[in-house]
Image (cartoon, rainbow, N blue to C red; front, side):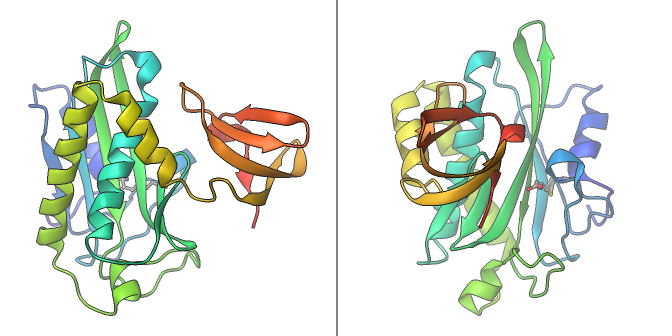
Length: 233
Ligand code: BTN
């Protein structure tokens, strides 16, 4: 579709009618793209991938929902490594970085029926051919590789990788998923500064089974939810 406010918002509106799992809504121009925590998502028209995918993971216990985040991150990271030899990492919980800059953001909206997933709208904004961003920490494939990339080709590869990792999730390959996610985590096993109740030095060691970030500090391992910790340079 040529233009819409937000592919996630549009998919959510369409959920009142039966839509098959795997439905993709894609636009070349979002006029009100949504980011995480109420932020907006910046993407120049015709230059990037901005789309939403409908999943229905009724097989997934709600307590394991972080595994869905992980498989989406892994699919994006695998796709990017096909285009660049620079280091691609996953900044917990679900930002994709190339070296020190963000190339892709993910916004997941969960809809439950009782205590099961009914719908999950996975929104992906991948910076492909845009060369100027207001956000200083944003980067695109073109900025990294100095060449224009075919949007349809990236989309096809990415959807193929999502299918592959989603099947691994269906098959409960939790160990494999978690190991892969950990091996790609931004700043894992490096000492850095974080902010929670004040600034402290810590080393990311991984995540707990619910997806909380495990950080080793001078008082031992501490576990943080998304809103409880901030990365400091
Ligand atoms: C983030 O803040 O990192 C998440 C960004 C998610 C952006 C994508 S673009 C397609 C989909 N539709 C939206 O409105 N947002 C997501």
